[in-house]
Image (tube, rainbow, N blue to C red):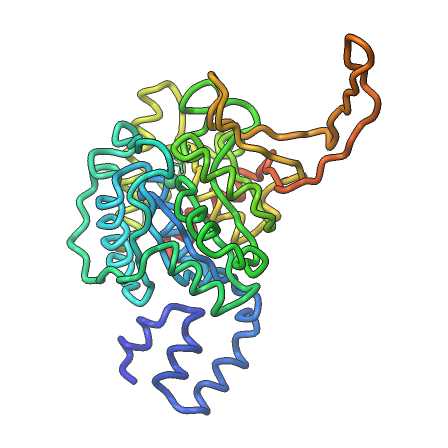
Length: 362
Ligand code: BDR
Ligand code: CA
């Protein structure tokens, strides 16, 4: 096996790669030398790339704790077509054509798409023009790919959606039997203290509230990495300077993305840019980065001012009102069953350090 071929096997894929290419002895030696492999988390990243999606994707690809089994693209920050192009160019830049990249939904379930080039640049990738992709799109439909992979590795796949939840909802609607077979869902979306689209709603949920409600109510272990906790992780000139000291295709790309985002935040009076999507990947890498109490979360799909809000019950009960004559009286407190771990705090410095060092290839 040539040296370059060996190098192309990314850390934890090494055993698989060698097993395919090398002999039994090499394979066994590699397996014994890598006890950490057992704890590697298999993820499917569902993304609407997206500048912070780009950082999330590169963090995932550069983290040995994660094994990115597929990337599915959802419309959100950009159209489905632009998002697919962006995803393909990024996996190509990272030399990871082995990862299936699949197109999914073309629009939200019941409403028109709202794209966000305003924040993410004309091409969604902070206006950074990446070289055309050497990687080819996987012909499978994103939700079908999710269904297939979950059945092929029951209880092993963690879904990490960092865009609107359309693809994940479509997968559940088509095959609800995947729900108990998914290890965990760690999603970026929602907020328990106001939105970024408007006073109530966060963008990923606002872009497809019905899909989000399906995902939150599905009954699988779910962690919500929301806007409010993401707002505590601001990447700023300090991290930009650190990224500027090292080089490589991925490092240099992320440097430009961060530069764009930091300048944009400064324009709007903030010292840094929130790491929304990368934090969801960070939680998949190391759940101790966040504090996440269990709550019951519903997605508002009808409210005049609150469509797309994630409504979280922080007390764990609801009052039971019974009609007595011409009024209701509170008779009892009924417990609610939590359906999500909701991130309320984060060790921001530790996370930012992790991000920078992984992008630097350390
Ligand atoms: C979310 O919306 C998108 O703009 C970002 O990529 C992130 O997923 C933040 O509200
Ligand atoms: Ca996103």
